[in-house]
Length: 96
Image (cartoon, rainbow, N blue to C red):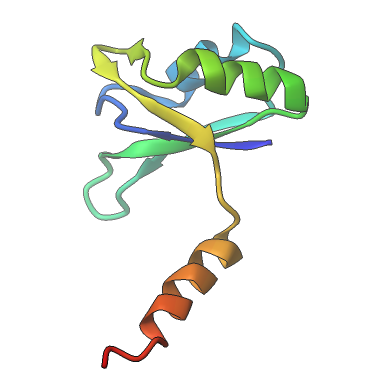
């Protein structure tokens, strides 16, 4: 399961994110998204966990918990296509 993690401290790195989720099971990957120009964290990231029940437990326990001094938001990531479709469907509606 792909997990979206928001409101990360700018000090949280990939390893710190991985460690927070490894408490709940095996982590396939953990990535804090970095700004290409500044090299600094954008304040969100993604964690991939292979076991759905472990991932669900991690989401339930870590959502609105504290990591590196910040209260984080944790939820199942939306697929890129579904997010883009929902944005496009709104913009295609008539405003009148």
